[in-house]
Structures are given as C-alpha cells and as structure tokens.
Length: 390
Ligand SMILES: Cc1ncc(COP(=O)(O)O)c(C=O)c1O
Image 1 (cartoon, rainbow, N blue to C red):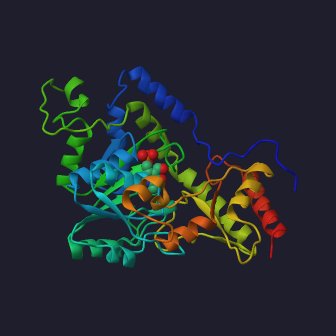
Image 2: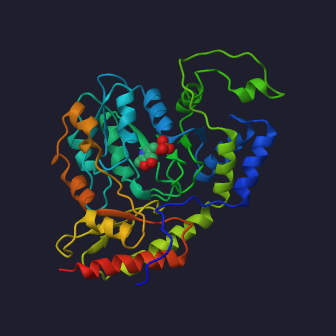
Image 3: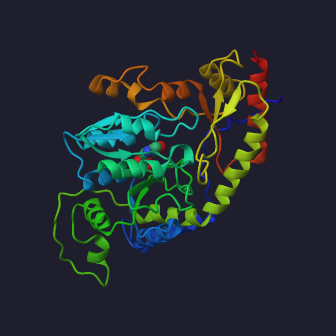
C-alpha cells in the first residue's frame, strides 16, 4: 500500500465557526470566569442527559474528588474501582486519604466485573467508582444492587460516556448517584479542559455546588450581576473547581454538534468492525454489552495465537512504517509504581485487566477523520496482520 505523506495523529479536536464565535462572544461579554455561558451549559447539558442537576467544572478529576468529598470519604475508608482506567479514578480516592481497592474486569469487555466487586467488600468499604470504559456503560443494575445491599455509595466515572446509555435506555448521568464527565481535549465533547457532575439527588447537588466554589453560599454570578448582591457566607472550606465562560462557550457549540460528531464515530466504528471481522489474529473490543456505545475509543486486540508479533511491535510498525498514531487505554493502574509502592499491588493481581492490557491498541477514532483516513488505517492493520500471520 502507498504510505501517506502526513502523520495521522491519534486525535484531533473537531470544531467549526460556532466554537470560534462562542469563545469570542464570551471574551467580549466581560464574563471570563463562571458567568451566563456556564449557567446555560449546565442547563442544556442537564436537559440533554435528562437529569435534574448538572454542575460544570474545570475537569472530571475535580468532579470525582468533589463527589468523594460530599459522599464523606476519608481516612480509613476503602473505595472499590477498576484497574482498567485512567489514574484519576483512583488518585482522587487517595486524595481523600482513603484506600483504593481494585476489582478485576470482565475479560471480554474490560468493564468492572460486579462479581469481583463483591469479593472485595470489607467492613471498611464505603463506595464503588465504576468507569464506563471506552464509552460503554457498566452493568449498573448489578452494581447498584450490590451498593444497596451493602450500604455503599456509587460514584460513576463517566469521563468516556457523553452519549452512552444504560441498559434501560436512560442516558448515563441520569442517575441518583453522582456521575462525573470529562470534556478534556480528546473527549467526545471537548472544551480543552473541563468536566460536569450530574445527579438527581437535591441534597447532594446543594453540597456539590457549595464545595465547587470555595464553600461560598453565592457564586460570582449572584454577587456581581445586576440582580446580585455582594454579601455571601463561607460555609465550608471549599475548592476552586468552576468552569470558565470561554470553556462553556466551547461546550455549548460542541453540544450542538454532538449528534453529528457521534454519527461520524458510529460510521467509522462500523467500517473498522467490517474491515477486521475476517482478519486472523485481530479481534475487537465488544460494542455493548448493553446500552448505546459512545465509541469514545476503538480498540483492536492482538491475539498471540494468530499473530507472530507483539502488541508493542504492532504499535511501532503502525507508527513508524505507516505513520499512524495510536494509544493504549490503559496500563492497569495497580501496575504503576505509586500503587505498587504504597498499596503493595503486584503483577498477576488482576489477570483479566493485565491480559487485556497486553493485547490492546486504540486506533484513531474521531470526527475529524476522513473516510480515506479510516480506510488507510484498515489497510495498514490488515497488511501488518497478514505479514505476521501464523
Ligand atoms: C476514565 C477517566 N477518568 C477520569 C479522567 C479525568 O478527566 P479530566 O482530564 O477531565 O480530569 C479521564 C481522563 O482522561 C479518564 O479517561
């Protein structure tokens, strides 16, 4: 095949005139921090998800940490999460002074396995942080049932799950738990840096709102707008996690084009599925198993019994020979030095996550790609697989 001239980067933000106009409008309005655009974005995002409350933040990490704080996590507590995630899911547990406990994933889907969660429950367990990995919802019926049985909270890491639905068809985030979304640059809806927490619980919402902005009883909007008044009380030692109006302007424009962007992701994922269906030694992460897949990531799996090439070498060839950028999502968190040193985690503790990790490659999937780019990636993967077929 003919090698492309330009490197195909793994991800590229997708935006148009609406994003540019929105940011310029925000700059000109004089509201450079949390102002009317943030309030509008919160309202529109809540409507989109079908949830009662949404609070815009400067990251999903902030949302996870705030969630753990209002759910009362502190020293001595254990919180169960998945090893197959970005470190923010467990680092935030550490930030609260609690102990992250990992429950292995289903070997096929890579989603946290409810049976493994039950095995890890102790008298110190306070809650569960499931991750809707790659844009597919976890088995929330089973996880919520376990939480109810043992009196635990559930805080959903929905960083990958804008557009994902649960088994019952509801949007992820329309929950009585707290869900934390990410709008980081590579996410399905991006604001550069940014996040949103959603909940249907009024009491949790009030606490999250106050804690997200210094613990003040009123935000700048209530203090500095024409209708506001200057007086406020500090009722908690809160944090500074609010979104800016410039980021919210991006978010609003991205929300308007979300369906269009998702259509592209779905179209390209279908092209990949078809292209790899008959390739010996290549399998793909299942779409599902329940609810709608947001196709945040598209992963191929290198089956060593079909291919005489390691995952790492496959990545190297894609990168160096074919000029294709890739990713690996994720190195299991317990294998990182911080966790090994502080929590004694070891190779072999989470066999399903570790096996999956040794096989997966995330290939480009985003709305900025062209159909030619996607066909090119298909051809490159097929060619390497053919070359190393056993
Ligand atoms: C699963 C998961 N959780 C949390 C985060 C943190 O998101 P943010 O960068 O918005 O803080 C990420 C970011 O990539 C993620 O992938």
